Amino acid sequence: MKRANTKARQRTALLLCGSGVLLIAVCLCSVAIGSRPVSLDQIVTALTQSSAGGTALEAIRLRIPRTVLGVLLGVALASAGALMQAVTRNPLADPTILGLNSGASCAVVLSMAAFGLTSPSQYVWTALVGGGIGAAVVWWIGSLGKSGPNPLKLTLAGAVVGSMFSSVTSAVLLPRIDVISSFRFWAVGGISGARFSSMLPLLPIFGVGMVLAIICIPGLNALALGDELAVGLGGSIRRIRLLSWTAAVLLCAASTSLAGPIGFVGLIVPHVARLIVGPDFRKILAAGVLLGPLLLVGADVVGRLVSRPADVEVGIVTAIIGAPVFIALVRSGFARRSSL
Amino acid sequence: MARKTLDTLQAENPQGGPHENSHDSQHRLEARNVEVGYGDNLVIKGLNCAIPPASMGSIVGPNGCGKSTFLKSLARLLPARSGQVLLDGQAISSLPTKRVAQILGILPQAPAVPEGITVEELVSRGRHPHHGIFGGWNPQDDAAVDEALELTGMTSFSSTEVDSLSGGQRQRAWIALSLAQQTDILLLDEPTTYLDMTYQLEVLDLLAELNVARGTTIVMVLHDLSLAARYSDWILAVKDGTAAAMGKPSEVITEEFVRSVFNLESHVGMDPVTHTPVVTPLERHCLAAARNQAKS
Image 1 (cartoon, rainbow over the protein chains, first blue to last red):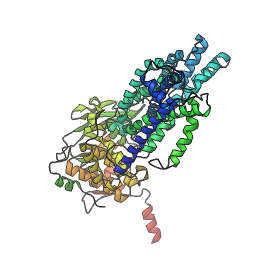
Image 2 (image 1 turned 90 degrees about the horizontal axis):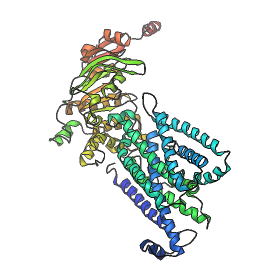
Image 3 (image 1 turned 180 degrees about the vertical axis):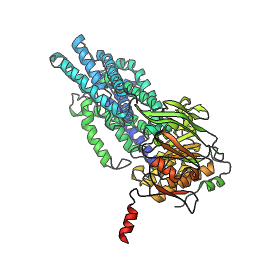
Image 4 (image 1 turned 60 degrees about the vertical axis):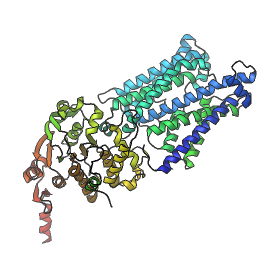
């Protein structure tokens, strides 16, 4: 927030720079590593000469959107997680609590069962709408009563609405073997099918979400001191909550619709960020924007390495490699404070 | 602990600080026929009170009388169901909340401590009302935070985590946050609760210094009548959601007053040092007399 002690600030800056460098390295790996190995020359060729052909170049051209999507989702999910945890004052808040994943899953299953949709590019919009509806219902239930939305009501509403949508999903899914087999791939969450053509129309949603997130941040810092003091400091708590909620919903809904529900990133990255940079949400967001993609793209690369030549989807790998890394980080004393 | 008082700070900085330090507060806060309640329960039942500018005053009353509720409504934390709270003659609810936060600060009873926050980071958040959405940190903010830390004697704790402070230090950190807000009116809800006698006096001295040197209007909810009498220019007694009395401590605090507002027999004497009323409560069942008799 201010110069504080310069030592701590230098350490934070160093860690953030390190994460940035690491992120670039991981992105390069993501383009270079896969079932078909490619050389650096070929990567440069693929990037500079759009007409050049060959299987190696084709592979690279498939991996570039995949990497871009990984970065985009990492940024979006980490930011959304930080917003959710701030608004609900719940350290375990993640997109599940928004009612968003369950709403999106429900919509995808219903569209598969009722309209026979089968291609991921078709689910994008149903998932987006379903997730949006889920989040809106949670917000509406959480805002009932005179006092308006508060952390406890929102968390409870999220749990209730989530269970409700999950039940509907199960009820539709159980008798339909055909739907189960296509749904299970969506439900894992992955970025292997990334295409620029499906990402482009969602970019404005990500953009608006990030702008709202940045606007909310000073208010969230005030809100962290309790509702009363936040009002005393000139924050309008209803507006801050609604804007943060909207930002988180836009970011999560766009992510989920592109890649299915990817857990863990939104849950853990804000915590890692807080451990490194402290409780100021501006710094948490800045760190999350680096660490989120680092975890997601890194997990995707690992997923490609462990079972060559096949892929393990990133939704599975994030938690498997993310959890040990997180524990190691906490134990290593990297953190600003040693205890959680 | 060596710490500067406001006088020395002002002597060093004769032009006044970044925020018109040297004038008395010109901002007027007034409650007109205010009614406040939670749900069906009406807690404040038509309270009138004009806070004298640049004064230091206390709101007293028995538990549950509504004194904290009234303070919150003065700070626009609770909306008035009817009647109005006026800041400079305008309904406080109609003013932009950030503008109000530049004039009026409130320290609630139990604010939340963000996990892992340091004293300096906490105090810095007091600058919130002085920033726009994209407003950056500037030297004025640094000066305000440094001054607030200095006045509360918390400079040496600035990089300590608030979680690890003692109760007294923590309370001073919160007061530092309110000071960093640099408002002309400061409302405090029981600022001395949980503090030992020394810290209680230290907090009240600090507020009195602020009131004298800067002309900050100070309104606090206090439980201790003798302390309230000692530090206040005026006392507002609240009973059952209405104003039972308001005036100078020496006029308000009498044995009859303690009996009617607190339902307590007492002896009201004179503090030999400050010449303000001192309330000595009498034991309701006269146990002291019985014990003395048994001994003799």
